[in-house]
Image 1 (cartoon, rainbow, N blue to C red):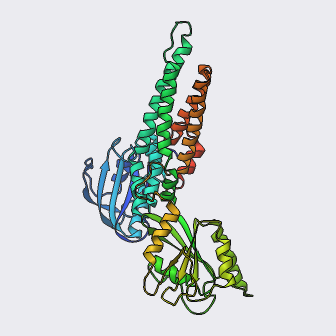
Image 2 (image 1 turned 90 degrees about the vertical axis):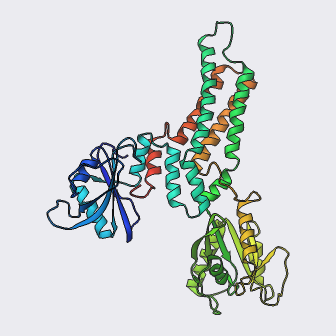
Image 3 (image 1 turned 90 degrees about the horizontal axis):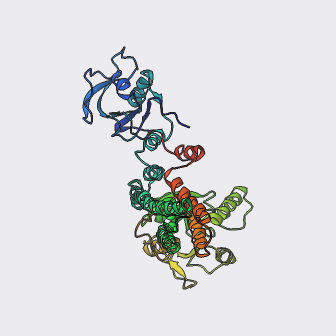
Amino acid sequence: MFSSDDTIVAIATPSGRGGIGVVRVSGSNATEIAARILTRRRALVPRQATLTRVHLNGDGSTTTRDHAIVTWFPAPQSYTGEHVVEISSHGSPVVLRGILSSLVTAGARLARPGEFTFRAFLNARIDLAQAEAVADLIEAATPLQAQMAFDQMEGTLSARLDALDRTLLDVIARLEASLDFPDEGFHFVEPHEVAARIDEVLNELNGVLAHEARGRLIREGATVVITGRVNAGKSSLFNALIGQERAIVTDVPGTTRDFLTETIDLHGLAVTLVDTAGERETKDTIEREGMARAMRARDSADLVLVAIDSGEELTDDDRRLIESSSAGTRLIVASKADRVPRWERPDAIRVSTTRGEGLDDLRCAMLRSLSGDEGLRDPAAISNLRHVTLLKEARTALTRARTAVTNQAPEEFVLADLHRARASFGEVVGIGSSEETLDYIFKHFCIGK
């Protein structure tokens, strides 16, 4: 796992060229190390942006420099809870790498992925659930994803779990007091009160978990695969939904050999749209491999769009695709709807990509198929599979405790399950989490965060 004894440095802005780039330094020696590469000799003023120059070569022996705005955030009021210095320079990769090299020469160590946020976690600036929300916010591809991640980063889930944990702690304290003083002639808490408090926690917990499927859908997105026989209008539909000419569209059968993917924002839901090879009998080895890949993509998709040319009679291939996709979540798209229809189905969505007709209806149907009747109007309180798993474990333990109270089991049985529930709450926010868990979570962060 990470060491928190030294001073770390990383480029905090994405790779590539930009107007501004930021290099972040964190650790007990951050200000001293940063001062070694600055031309300014006066001490930095806390939380005051300071214009200076920085050396790009490490030792200041040449005149290779850049203008920079340097800001010092003293511990503990910084992102990591340590001394943090942020150097904002021109966003040239050469400049940023030069500053990074200078700081390493001056005594800093290159940060590993997630190490700044891990230090924030160690220094109790954020809990583990908030740290995971930081990563989700960085990766957000839609406004709804960003809103949900920000809410969790602000501690909304952590605050709800903290309230439940305090309720359980009070019940546990009273039960343990009853065990400690068995001969006093009274109990510190009556069974009916224990049952009522457990029910209170269970009801709140059920409320948190009620929309976990919606939360995970928003966080993780969905995969939608477009399938159909050759020349059914799949690639035209793909291009229309993503809003650009990404797939090649011709009258030549078998143009799409492999599958293409693009991510779109479907009313707040990040959808990975997949255009696949058309279905037909062929001896072409490459085309057959493309169809095999299309089949595998369909099997793992959250939703399948079966494109069928509305201007042609249904073929055996069309009927086979309709039948084979019926077991999963699918929509039938009557493509090329500007032509005279040669077949009708009440469940088919008529779409003309040349006229732009039916696309909005298709998008709405896709969203309903993926999200259910409740839609995606608001973010959910919980979206992370790790959190969902732990809270379901807590619910199971609380249900056992409630049953034990009803059956008048000894306090020890009730206490054991209440402690298990609290342990699960704790793991969500990082209390009692193993080093393996922490390492897995933080190694998926980007460097510089």
